[in-house]
Amino acid sequence: MTLLTLNNVSKRFDGVTAVDGASFQIDRGEVVGFLGPNGAGKSTTMRLITQFYEPDTGDVLFDGFPLAERSREAKRRIGYLPENNPLYGEMLVSEYLEFVARLRDLTGSEGGQALDEAVARTGIGNVFYRPIGELSKGYKQRVGLAQAILHRPDLLVLDEPTEGLDPNQRVEIRRLISELGKERTVILSTHVLPEVQHTCSRLLVIHQGRIVADGSVDALAAHAEGAVRISVEVEGEGIVEGLRTLDGVLNVEAIQQRAGRHVVSVSADSSKELRPAVFGLARDRGWTLYELHQEARDLEDMFRELTRSEP
View 1 (cartoon, rainbow, N blue to C red):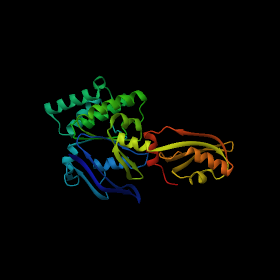
View 2: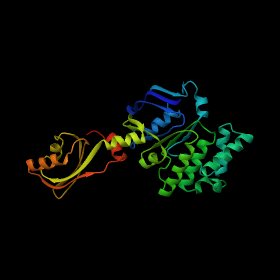
View 3: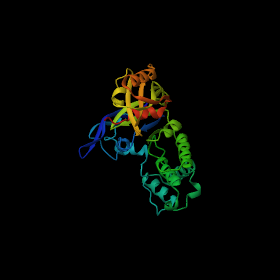
View 4: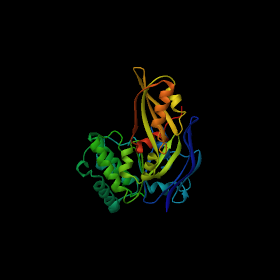
């Protein structure tokens, strides 16, 4: 059953389009990775979903009703960890979470039970009576997650939850998100591919404000495997333009130039064996070919291709 729907949603700031006609649906129980490079529109989309912003055009539906019509009800059912994780550093963790509980109308035994559960789920019991300002970045993120799940939301929206963490902290937060995803719908915004590969079953990719891919991790990985990438190191004139003329070439990217040699990455249809054609082109044009090999493909290749800025 669909929990969240965006229908042709757009948002602009001072004439700059941050989100451009975004449309997608998220079903109950899904853990969805929301991918995109910096500035692609991820955070703006998260803020539209959580009602920090109102869309200029289009509709955001939560459980079938427009957010604009049932704002208070929706906010009671959505948990949000913003990218900057705004915390009160001078407060104790206990004071902060009790404050959030009161804001959420969680009082008495209900509030105490919700607080105990959030503390246990996020593993912050040993810092519960410490000032937030003294905590490590990893524990601060855990406190942010605790406030986001305190009211047992149906939808959990996490914007760059592992940004700035060391590798060990990233693993711990990923594990925690995976556990949370077993009980609720989660949208995880990130530009770090390992985050979604380890925690998500479905990916949405946004680029320049537009949704450019939507599918399972396996399906998008298979998309990446539908092409090959060939690395070429060659000396001569008109390298990039010449390689683009070959049948089956999807993209040619100049990587670097050193000592008169050009290092170029060529993406091509996997049904074409391009290396003999590159060798023949080098011979015909008088290029000196130093290196020619096919590289392995993975999800990162798919991400780079979908979010490559047009020249």
